Image (cartoon, rainbow, N blue to C red; front, side, top):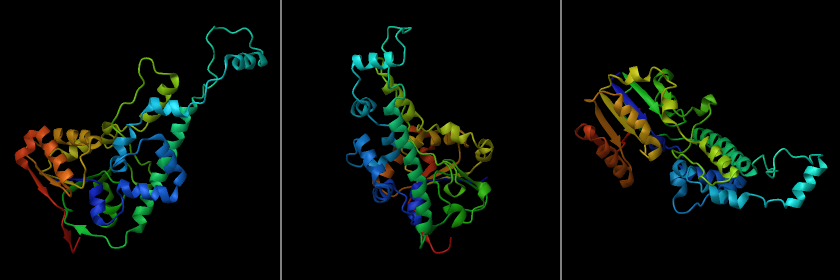
Length: 297
């Protein structure tokens, strides 16, 4: 395989899809306002929170969340009356039982994240169906393999790339696959944290991305990329959530292959420069470009 393309959301935005997380916020506020309001209640959404949605998802202040949404503790007299009513006068342990064993805070967070997942998948489906005048850029179709971080069918639908040469590493909406989104944090309670905090952290951990889990679900990938000549990173933000994927790709591709990064904003260039600085061996093998529209795909 001569060309390896790593496709990020900037590629879909260039094509004309409204797939930024800012678009998702506006879509959510319009179509599922109660979900949006619950997100606002859970997270401190200041500044450009939605622009860094996946990273911010793991930044929940769990201790504060539990304090805000935990019901007041029941008086000891009410607990005793409850136990006596059930005929449990002889308790096996002197520890006062927790009548909130269901962990309502964790359940609330789980429900919010699950319905957010549903909304996310509906939004991606809407994005695909609403494009009317797509823009194209040049890509090499022959001897190419594509690692697609997007959930859309832009490559298969607009560029007519065969399905077997596209790895949707985070799921494909049109195939009704579970779409993977999440953060790269490891939320956990402290030594003296309550059970509710620990359970809420566990729910948040379900949306932690494990890049190697998604890489290794395609067992032929190491062999496919082992002899690539050129790596084209188009539209990938290279955020902290994505860096582990690129680290793995850099380690499993030839040390003399060329790298090409597309950029759109100055922040994109800063992230690319940081990645190249941390992977100094590709410094003299990389170029920066901006995606250009072509008439024929």
